[in-house]
Length: 265
Ligand SMILES: NC(=O)c1ccc[n+]([C@@H]2O[C@H](COP(=O)([O-])OP(=O)(O)OC[C@H]3O[C@@H](n4cnc5c(N)ncnc54)[C@H](OP(=O)(O)O)[C@@H]3O)[C@@H](O)[C@H]2O)c1
Image (cartoon, rainbow, N blue to C red; front, side):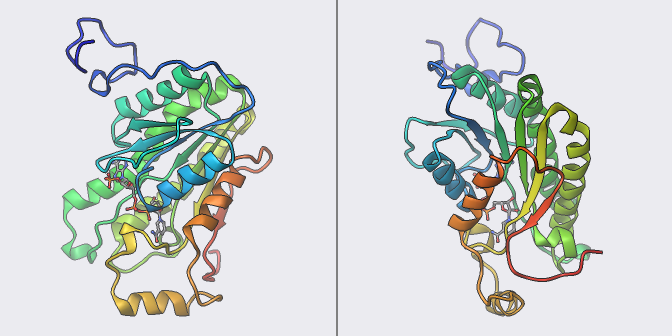
């Protein structure tokens, strides 16, 4: 076999030659649903992979720079930079080739580059918007073809409380996540007639690499403003997302899973 990118054969549309040959087709198991999870090597991503797998789904686990740990054979690792259209399309195509369908997409990839706005670089603004927002656009566009063909699908966007209420030092991230809520509701209106649901989840503060460097006083404030006085857990958020992805009569909604209160304005 030629190494990736050196084959004389042209790649099928949407397939990035750098990503190598498509996964081997498996006999379709119509009873198992198929989910594509972005940012699957991250803290919440790994919890999502575990939960969907435990619930009997086939999982395409999109990893970016960090590799995935060893996975069961119901998990297909796919290299996926969500800011690249060719990667997004190749990931959706990998699901079709391997399992013949795509039932759910979890737009989970995200990053922060926190700084007060006046000290924030243009490069960080672009990076944060590209990953948290444009990535959801590109992956949703890639997933919608098969979902609309099947007349069934569910997209879950992992947004943030910062996108609802803003957060000092996170203008880029808050803007991206607020826009993700707008994308969720607009897309839900567009594809509801095609029987595709689109919802957003605000997972709350979670113990992942993203929050590892929070100052102690910020942690204390986040705990104090939570009516339960504690953060949610990765397992509980993953359980909710996997349940939500099975619902067929709920769309265009925003589910907040931490227990901070803020008026809806
Ligand atoms: N942790 C929290 O308290 C919290 C709160 C609210 C919302 N969220 C949201 O929850 C989601 C998961 O975050 P997390 O807490 O699990 O953070 P995390 O552990 O840092 O995971 C983020 C993942 O996103 C991936 N990623 C970054 N850029 C990417 C790109 N261009 N293409 C594809 N993947 C990319 C990262 O991969 P690489 O490291 O390989 O680049 C990483 O695997 C994010 O959308 C985040 O905004 C988290």
